Length: 67
Image 1 (spheres, rainbow, N blue to C red):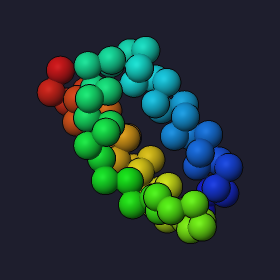
Image 2 (cartoon, helix red, strand yellow; image 1 turned 90 degrees about the vertical axis):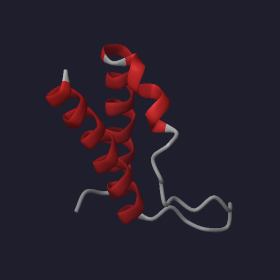
Image 3 (cartoon, helix red, strand yellow; image 1 turned 120 degrees about the vertical axis):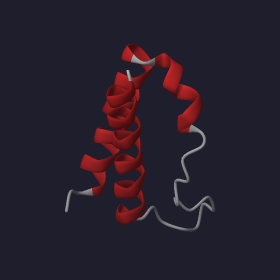
Image 4 (tube, one colour; image 1 turned 60 degrees about the vertical axis):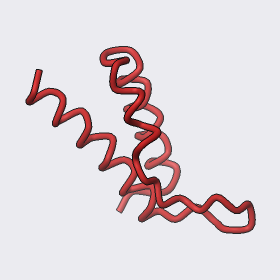
């Protein structure tokens, strides 16, 4: 599994890609259940980051198939 830093970097890169290439998809990013803890005292979970990254990738794949 990727490290937490790698997952964060991949999330950042795919978000930038969506913003540049498909800005109409940005509204859907906020609808993705992140599963990332919101409390400061809770640590980010690699599995939650991976799930979020997978969700972003799925948005792009689905959009590409439909358009």
